[in-house]
Image (cartoon, rainbow, N blue to C red; front, side):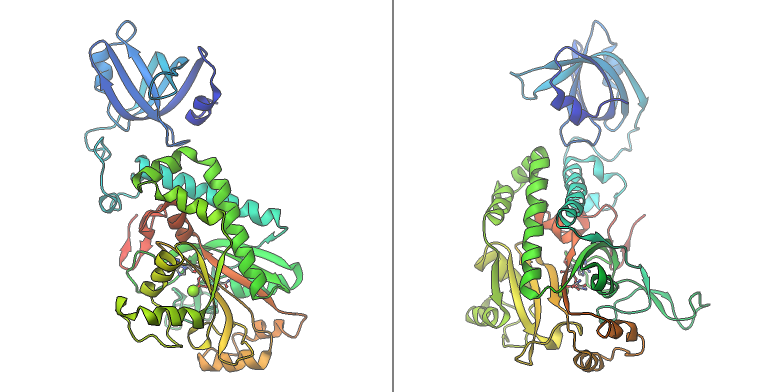
Length: 447
Ligand code: 4AD
Ligand code: MG
């Protein structure tokens, strides 16, 4: 196998003959010498291939277009005084798959909105190379983190018969009016949590990492109909324990990903006036901020004129504008809001002694808002039943879940991390449509 461009650049084997393949990202020069930049997706960096007139028909090489696939044999050379650290002096070159004039990616930058129309090709731009390489590493580091903490990796079902969040946002797979496959109503999973809880009672520490589907008709920059969610669930944990797990996890994956992608972060950081890396590093070096919901309300009240929703009282379900104010302006970094009023939080959350709040937390981060939502779980069957009837959730369908409480469930806590929102936070990209290869959002399904 040929080495990847990343391996070649890092190898420093001066004067060695090598072979490589990749796609043209630029082609410039004159009738004496030409320079082609090649990229193979292993890094955002391109490698420069130098073509001399002695060996090549440069008129022919000039015709090779951006996007074409090349096979190159050449000599690796260190170039300490040039802009790039190395280059390859071509000995032999084949254009093994030329592009034609309709290849949409050219030298001039294309805006993100236009690129959204071509999700199958947009990854051949620098910005999407950076985002998607970072996305891939974030996913692997999440697995590494949970592995390092002794978690079991659990696969929860994608087709399910229960609405785990009780919000009625499940995409319908089978309904009563169709030729039934399952002979009952079935939806795509909005969460793996309830199944996760059953395994936490027995395996103690589990996490899921899978696709999640929500038929939410909200057309925002942070909602997708199909997204990936990471959901750890830990038996015997209380709210405080799970908040700290989320903090450890974020710091671990962000630190490792920063280390593995210096070039990709440098590129993104330059686009964001040097704020990206600084903000991430500030977070890594800081203790997580934790704020009571009731205190958050007091803070928001004082500046209520800033908001569209000015009626700020205990009981308000914080809107994006409020969350952003807290994370972006007040804390200027991640902040966990805890102990929300029970009225707008899910039925499974642990009812606090005050009888009005639940042991829940939302982790808010700048630029994104809610990155994580989690809670300690209710263990008292009667309390659960009354919460379920408040939300009109069928007790019969959820009997299996209630039964867990009779079979050694001593309580657990967990959270859900929206993976695309993590990608947004870590790359600084401000639309969820640019954080996932093929976005599915309300009214939009391409390819
Ligand atoms: O806050 P949510 O709805 O919590 C749950 O689903 C719980 N079952 C989690 C748990 O305790 N195990 O969703 C968790 C996270 C959100 O904080 C958000 O980051 C992400 O999932 N999320 C979405 N991301 C993209 N598009 C959507 N439509 C999302 N809905 C939730
Ligand atoms: Mg939530």
